[in-house]
Length: 167
Image 1 (cartoon, rainbow, N blue to C red):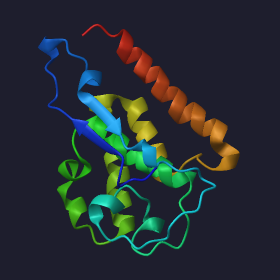
Image 2 (cartoon, helix red, strand yellow; image 1 turned 90 degrees about the vertical axis):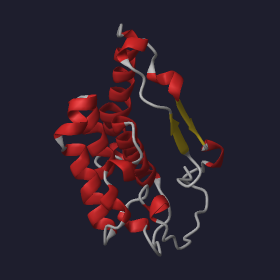
Image 3 (cartoon, rainbow, N blue to C red; image 1 turned 90 degrees about the horizontal axis):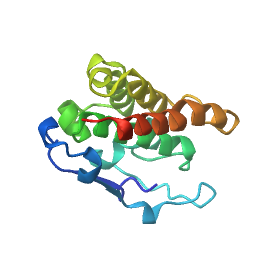
Image 4 (cartoon, one colour; image 1 turned 180 degrees about the vertical axis):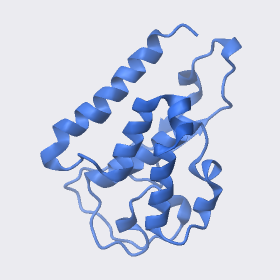
């Protein structure tokens, strides 16, 4: 996925009294610029924090490696953090705008996934999924079935649970 193109627009959080589901307020778009992993990738320098935050440390600044599936998984982790808090990543942790290194930014993101706030808001299963995405656990070719079970199947189960909830 091209991280600078995919965007999420969130309206204000609906009140519980309105019985209005979140799904009617959420738009995720920009995947017309998605690319196959086998496609060529540009190793262009990138120094804009608002774009780099969605990429793992190895892709900050002057990247030395091609984009790969684990990079997309990392971006998914950041997006899931934003969805979980219903805020942009910089509104969740404003110090991410000025963090001195990519590794420190990743540490902050991982600590957000492990913190009590996200688990309290979205549940421990959701928080664990975010952590898996940000740490790159089980998203290599040889562990994709385990990744699918831990992340994708769990997200599907959580979505099904939400769909059956009577708010």
